[in-house]
Length: 155
Image 1 (cartoon, rainbow, N blue to C red):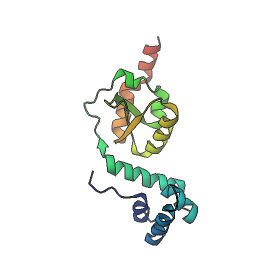
Image 2: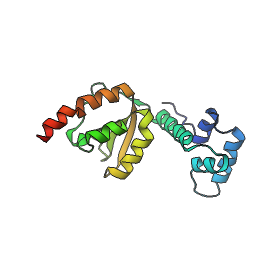
Image 3: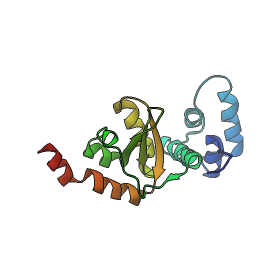
Image 4: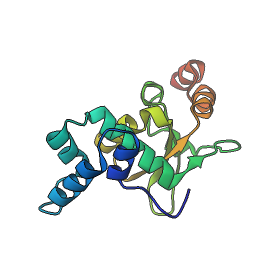
């Protein structure tokens, strides 16, 4: 993590999805009213939703860094917030409840945006996401959401 978090417009320019002039034009338009930068970039210059999502994920990951799952033991109450199928589908693992009451969830970078959307609609209460390595998420899912564990818990 560094002290300067790039804005979405800067990332879209770096990714070649907007020119610098286009990003500045979107920023000027954004000053006229509370419309998200990505939505304006999509409307004004045809930037794809996937492109905007990739820039957002990059921005979020740069701001929060990568969470290491080595040695992390999840709280049973946190694990109970998701079914195995949900955790696997969105490649996300609930870890613990923070002192603030937020549920800390680790997700792989490639599914982060979808995991955040799912959580916003399906998990009661506030959540906080961190990106973890894909292999670490897979190992965590296998260890804590393995099918045989689910069967034992149900029986």
